[in-house]
Image (tube, rainbow, N blue to C red; front, side, top):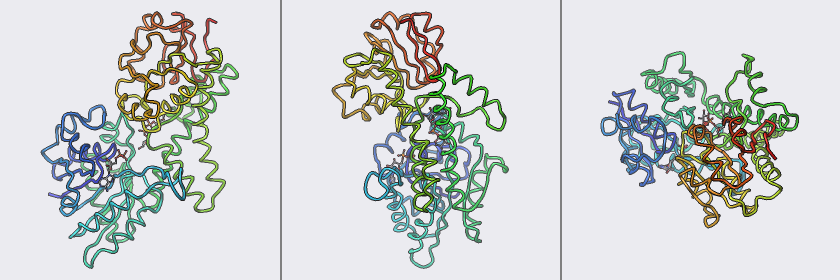
Amino acid sequence: MKNILCIGAGYVGGPTMAMIARKCPDYNVVVVDINEERIAAWQSDELPIYEPGLAELVKSTAGKNLFFSTDVAAEIEKADIIFVSVNTPTKTFGKGAGKAADLQYWEKTARVILANSKSDKIVVEKSTLPVRTADAMERILKTAPDGIKFEVLSNPEFMAEGTAVEDLEDPDRVLIGGHDTESGQKAVQALVDIYRHWVPEEKVVTMNLWSSELSKLAANAFLAQRVSSINSLSAICEATEANVAEVSRAIGMDSRIGSKFLKASVGFGGSCFKKDILNLVYLCETYGLEEVARYWEQVVKINDYQQSRFVANMISSMFNTVADKRIAVLGFAFKADTGDTRESPAISICKLLLDEQANVVVSDPKAIGNAKKDLAEYADKVEYEEDVYAAVKGAHAIAVLTEWPMYETLDYKKIFDLMEKPQFIFDGRNFLDHDMLYDIGFNVYSIGKAPKKHI
Ligand code: UDX
Ligand code: ADP
C-alpha cells in the first residue's frame, strides 16, 4: 500500500484528499496541518469547511484510509507522495506587496520535507503558485544528503467552492506537469495512476512543469476576465436601458463564446481569482512585460469598480444618503453553497456602507462566523441576524449579495411589511423575480437593468 500525504488541510487539501481516499482504497491517505484546531475539526462531525456532499465523503473514508494528523514530521517520513496545499496569500509587505504571492509557508514546507525525509519522494504542488515556483522547491530539496531524490510535480486544482465534491468526482481535466527526464516521467506516471482510478484517460493531461503552473493562473484569469467583461457591459446596460441578462444570453449562444461565467454580479470574490491575476500581473512585470501586466490588471480594476458602483447606486437611489438607515445585507459568502468569505464583494460593500454611516445588518445561512472576522474593525457598528425576517425588520433597504437559493423563496410580502417605507431592494446577483417584487411595492434595483421604481 502506498502512502499519500497532504500538507495543508484547507479548502483544497481536505476535499481533494477525501476524494483520492474514496476512489483509491489501495492507498493510505493522511492530511496534516500545523493548525490543531483545524485538524480536530476534520476529525469531528463539524468539518472546518462547508461543502455540499463533503461530510458524507469524509465519513465514508475517515479512519479507513483517510486520516488527519498534526504530526507533520512523522507523516513526511512515511510518505511516498507528498501533496503540498499550504496557503499562498498575496504578499502584504516588502517587494511585490499587494501583488506577488507570499511564499513563506511554501518555502517552510519545503524545508520541513527536506528535514524529515529518509527516502525518495514525489512532491506535488497543489496550491496555485507563481510560475517557476517548482524551481525554488527543487533547489531547496536538492540540498538533500546524497542518495535521497525528490521529484517535483505540478498538479493544480480546478475545483470550485460549493461544487468541490462534484468537480473532484468529474473534473473537466486533471493537469500534471513534470520534467521531461526519465525520473520526471516516472513520477508523472505515479500521479497519473492515482487519478486513473476514476478519471478517464483523455482527461488526464500531462505537460511540462511550467506550462502546468501557468495554465492554472491562465484558467482563473480567463474566468475572471469573463465576469469583468460582462460586469463592464452591465454599466453600459444601466446607462442605455439595455438588459445585461439578454445581452449575456445573446452572446453566450455563440458556441465560440459559450454561456458560462457571463452572469453580471456585484463582482467576483473567492480566494483565487484576484490573487491569481495579481500573481500573473507581478510575473509579467518581473519579465518586463508591462503591456501584458496592465491588460490583466484591468480585470481586477473593473471588479473593484463594480462594487463601488453598486454602493454609489444604492446611495443615489436612496435620496443621496444612507446615514443612519438600516440596510439588510442578505448573503455575505462570495458565492452560494459555501461559508467562505475570502475576497467576497460583501466585505467591501459593507465597509463602504458603514463608512457612509449606514446601520448594516448581515444575514447569511453559512457565513456569519467569517463575516464577523472580516468586519471585526466595525464590530460595534454591525448587527448579525441569521434569520432573514429579523434582519429586514425596520430596514430601509435590502442588498442581496449572494445568490443563495433560499432567497428566491422568501415571503417578500411579509418582508415588505416589515420594512420602512419606501422599501428598496438591490439585487446584486440578478436572480430574484423583479416583476413580483415590483408588484408587491418594492423599488427594485439590479445589475445591468433599468430599475423598476414606484417613486
Ligand atoms: C475558481 C475557479 O472556478 C476554480 O476552477 C479554481 O480552482 C478556484 O477559483 P471559486 O473561486 O471557488 O473557483 O468559484 P467560482 O465559481 O469560479 O466563482 C468565483 C466568483 O465569480 C464568485 O464570486 C462568483 O459569484 C463570481 N461569478 C462567477 C460571477 O460573478 N459571475 C459568473 O458568471 C460566474
Ligand atoms: P487553500 O484554499 O489553498 O486550501 P487554506 O488557507 O484553506 O488554503 O489552507 C491552507 C492550510 O495550510 C491551512 O490550514 C494552514 O494551517 C496550512 N499550513 C500552512 N503552512 C503549513 C505548514 N508549514 N505545515 C502544515 N500546514 C500548513
